[in-house]
Image (cartoon, rainbow, N blue to C red; front, side, top):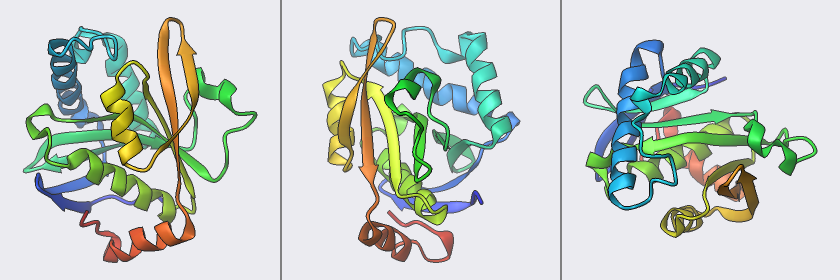
Length: 202
């Protein structure tokens, strides 16, 4: 079962992680718009392009579909969407060829972003910690994700979070680095011990 209403805390303050609803789409798109603007200013538009997600109709539909499937989660701070991630047992179509069959023991993270106004305050790491907890609650022992391979800082971010590079994906002319994290029994126990009553304090 998916769990909602989990609390995560850190230098960013306190956030509540819950499953997104259709009314949250504008707030989710605003998080990605801020990320796209920030990446473009840094000369990294190759990651998600330079067009705000809110101006792309297909993005509205994609997020609405994830919400309908129950796989899009958001972190709220003071009632405002501050972070977002999809966590699912289905691998994205562009990465399917990396497995004969995606492991039953794994979940895949997509659409992971946090508001740029909270840069450096640890919300992203806290959300990854929540994802680990979510995986262990649901009997999973692996997390997979991918990111733009030509952003070394982003690849390093996942490495420092304990993810191991497991290959390179080529999607048209776009290159993505595939990452995987094994949640050992000891790691799973640590995550759950740090999260009494379905509450995460990382």
